[in-house]
Length: 343
Image 1 (cartoon, rainbow, N blue to C red):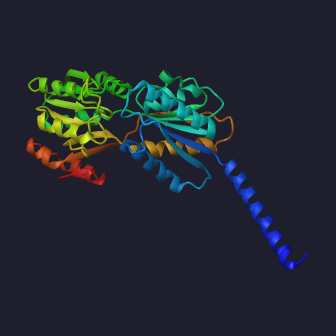
Image 2: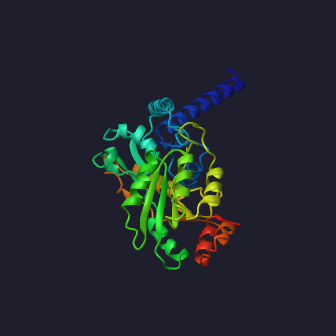
């Protein structure tokens, strides 16, 4: 055998061994699947992912992370929901993740709750408005996570600030879907004193939202705007209304001061928003997941978290000034730090 022939064989053996080593290494790495309720283009999904990436940049433990999107923010069509759910189950069966991070209620309701109490995958639910026992997670040995609590303490305090200490009559608008119903439940169960709730409306029709807002002209001082992903024009017209159109109409036509609790309300054209911080949810979910995966086999799930202390302030100065509202500097600085202080 010639020297060049031997050299070629050795290189081939080395490359084959290296490929086998990589395959074994990748197969042994823990696998995480991030399952989003909304689509890849959803600002909420993107910001949760941003928080996840912040933790992964610091992580030194080998791990494979993949993403799957149900895309349910803009459709309540049963066929589309069924197809999205089936695709998600196929992704889990194909990828065989060690752990699933299930973001928002829809992914838990339609998909991940089916794996509660099973040997795998581990489940980290995140930004769920409904309680863990609703999904059967409270008694499941393979589930933990982080609930979403709307920042209602901050909203109540802000109302006192903008009204210079006077109590307010509060009206509330929500979607009539899983997320909207859960948000509305939190709002109605909250102790608003000295303010009081005077009206609520849950609907998936923008036309009905508009009617409700007009009816509250002299009945309410504040209008809380909850999530509106997937809001359609009317019961007859199922076209989804663009976010900026929703916010612009509300700001132009609402006599009560609108405060958005949807994470993009100010960016969409609203004047004031106090919202959950999606990036913080992503950071906490990935931190919990990595810690759990690095624990010894048989270790109990991490302690569940009831909400996050962090929230995001958004301000569009021109709209607040038009209503004669001047917020203290600390609000402006909080919005500026988050990149949500707009002219």
